[in-house]
Image (tube, rainbow, N blue to C red; front, top):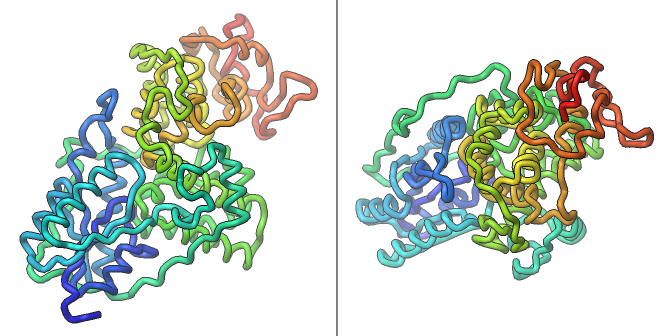
Length: 486
């Protein structure tokens, strides 16, 4: 490296970690001074695009603030710090370039969706105006964009299974990067800036519900501790496939998603730890299934690259004309957990109280909103954007398109049976419709097949049995024996 390498600004967005961070890695080897920078972009705290609900709710904001604080502490231990500013990244970077006079490069990871790409376009314009080099990397997925067997991205399959099989048979995961233990210092005279509080965004710190399935804090430190616990301390990963459809508690699934969404943990690091676990402990369907789920996350990100703005379109990827309703009264019933369908309501109340919901719950409430209520799927997607602690734009909209039947689902008109799902996975609430619980706002004809069914039983002698752990109590959770409620 020459003595005139200058100063590199490392703009961090959804990559709030030190380990396996190519932005920090490049700057460490190509600059005399390195400025890790995080900007609280005011556009992230406005309303959602279509329905103007808050973009960032209290649970995710708290998790983000914790992640930013944790990264600052980590970088300080390595001789640096995290510079924090409030403002649009393109404006903040322009001000730093002008203030310092020594900036030679701006470095960041590329994103996949329009708002983030617009920021990148603005950054490029600022750098061109000031003669500053732009250096970008792709680092958000398990498989690198340039290593896909589908080039250009327009050739990406529209079915996940085809995508998965192609990658598993003909692509490789790049190794994680070795990071320096000591980082280059900030440019002289630069203030690190204060980290804002919840109150600075007009929000209150949410009360932690003791029943939450995600009682964790944000940040790289907690993410790595979670992996250590789930893999090495408890061997829970070895039974993940059997427990992943759980609803209650911390240990039925990995819970990596909130940290992955902010880049607090690298998917490639998870992959390497799975490989190590399989070598040293055991390799089975459960260890494979963790990678299977990471591939789903990759897939939705690449789908966003392929389709661009269409992932936000009412007609979806398939350009289907569906007469979606925009009934705000029905939507309020859904979002407040007052539909009269206890399985839906319990999941929606959990989301509101904790910012988290199980994967099984998400599939069901999305199916109910789109297939039973017939509401505009974007209402649900934007509500999730507001509340989910693990909100990821590509996974969120990809999954909602899938549930609405206008995305990457190869089966036409897939629909979850809310009553059967409740009996199979959550048949222990002990309420009676129309007596101790309100009547459903809608009823579906397929529900009648499960009247008087016991939890875990099939309505047909040769039918597929649900999970066997549910007891007989709670059958009135879904149906009154005195009245044919559904």
